Structures are given as C-alpha cells and as structure tokens.
Length: 308
Ligand code: DHB
Ligand code: FE
Image (cartoon, rainbow, N blue to C red; front, side):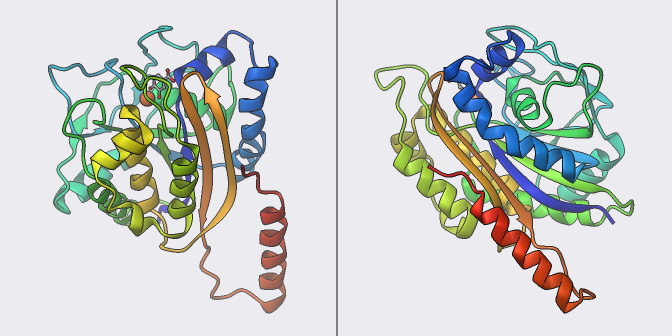
C-alpha cells in the first residue's frame, strides 16, 4: 500500500529561485534564508520518498484569467518548468507519476471532490522553488516523481481552508488505496504573509504567521475556520496562499510529530515559513527497547528544532 509519511510546508518565493540559479546563495541576505533549509535537505535525503504530491498555485504560467480550475491535478508523465518574471528556471524537467495520479483523480472525484484532470501542464516557481529548497539543485534529474496539484488562489473565489483540509483527507484515502508500496510525501506551498501590490505592499505579520505554524502543527482544525477576509487582513492579499498548507495538513494524522521548523523575514516581499510534520509510525510490533530509542531520537530532534 502507498503511504503518506510526512508533510512539508514551504514558501515558494520566486526570488529564492533566482538567487539559487544566479549563484547568490552565499550572500548574507540569502544565506540567512538558505541556512534554514540545510537540515531539511538532509531530512529529505534520508527520507527518500518515491513520490511527492506538491500542492502549489500557478501564477499565470500554465493557466490565465481565461481558465482557472479550483483544483487541478497533474496526471502527465512530465511537467516542463515555466515562469513569469525571471522566466523558466534552469532545473530538470519534473517527472510525474501518471498511474498514481490517475488513481488519485478517480478516488478523489468518486469521493465527491471534483478535481480538474490536467494531462499537459507547465509548472512555475510555486512548485520548483520548494523542490529546490528540499532536494537541492540536481543537474540531470530530480530524485523522486512529482504529482502537482494546482490550486486557484489568484482569482476570487479561492477554495475555503476547510475545503482544502477535507481534500487533503480525500487525497490520503486515495493514496492509501493504491496497492503498490510507495513512500509519499505531500508539500503545501506558498505564503507566509505577503502582499505584492497596492498601498499595503510589503506587509508582513510575523505574529500571525507564527501562530499559524503553531496551530498547523497542533490544532489544525482551528485553522479550517479562518475566513478569507482574515487571511487578507492579517497576512496580506497573497497570504491567501496559506490555505494550500491545509491540504497538506489534512493528509496527515490528527496528531503529528513536528520535526523541523524555520521562519525568517523577509525574502523579497515575503515572510518565509517552513515546517516538516511526520505521521507517527504505527508501532504494533515494536519492542519496548526500540520504542524508548525512538522517543530519545524524537527528543534529540526537538532539541535541534529551529524556531524564531
Ligand atoms: C512574491 C512571492 C510569491 O509567493 C509569489 O508567488 C510571487 C512574488 C514576492 O515576494 O515578490
Ligand atoms: Fe506565490
């Protein structure tokens, strides 16, 4: 059976991609940002997922105002990079998992979540920047398959946080009914607080962001009740991207282990947030000794959490 073992939340600021691609990672401004992802890259290299479901939003690269699906699942064999602004990033083509994606589409749609199936799609910084932050900059190929899930948060009306959370649960049911043994991780991307234009351009609300991360970890149902207007007011117009993190969170256990957190401001106009949440492994056959070892490891990881 396929299993979702962990969720990753990460901002997807396009300037981070540009800094990586133009060799600016050692500049103090950018080093502050990238240093927060060093342990995450190690975690990912140890975890070695077979598939990453990446929830992100397209920024008028694949879709335009002419057609904006609320939830679009990438079922293609591959997804070329594309972008606004700096143009397509020089990263490898993203390889899909059409079999698992088709299974998710069938399961989730029959579960009454009406996804749009997309068999040809380019993917932008919303997806490629979190990939670079977690997988590094491979020259030839990314280390795992990717199923993109594009969410409309750019044109009114976006989906509610509650709808996103419930979709995450449906995605989990879909993954767990896939017969092949696959290790799956799910990304929620975007945010945290930011506003790109208008009189409040540059808005960042660290207090609200940090409370969001706390609740995401321990009390996610509270977040499902936040109305759009509160995201807009507290986290800026583009802060609405944060509803996508609730799809990731819905796909995890109610109680999760927070293994890592990082928060820094700013990158470009944006507050950068990052979290790794692991599903607790089922331990029926575990010996007492092994369980104690695992608790020690968890305590060790908690000591090494980065916050603030
Ligand atoms: C910026 C941040 C984003 O998340 C995005 O999608 C586009 C721009 C910014 O900080 O400029
Ligand atoms: Fe964005």
